[in-house]
Length: 199
Image (tube, rainbow, N blue to C red):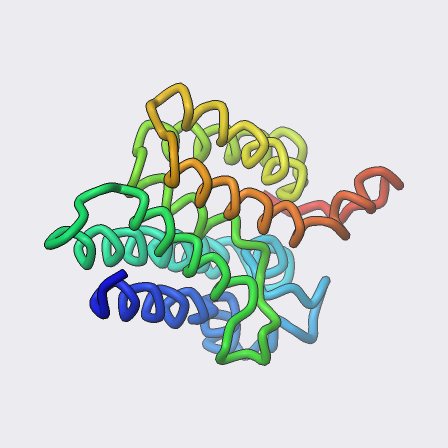
């Protein structure tokens, strides 16, 4: 690994640590960690602050994944053009989103940032995942259900579009992290008391 790639990975983590839910909510006079579920993410902003602020959060968090993956690809281009560096940088961004250095390592679930990684690396999979997530969220009014469904489907979809080797390994790590961050949501789903969103 070159110094350039190492710097790109570190930068990807820092970019991932920028919490748009916290920033956008504060712009509207709300501390998102103290309202609703307390989770600094899209769903809680939608419930607690409103649709347009939540849309801004969704765009910002997705762009973190896009930018991080692009940084990984560019940093590796001079020595190793393989796309797996983009997936690895994306993983670092998702880690930053879930455990942000700027917010005492208490962040969101990582779904939108992971989507951004897919949009950059395998845009067809990113498009399918995004559309299915939006449709399921609209139907179920529960973003966590949609998130779990789409991340579980991301691996076979990615394989269908030729993702393999280290790229698939880093993508699997992203999926596992996102699922881990949803463990409490999944428990509430089983109990039938998961929070709903207003869409």
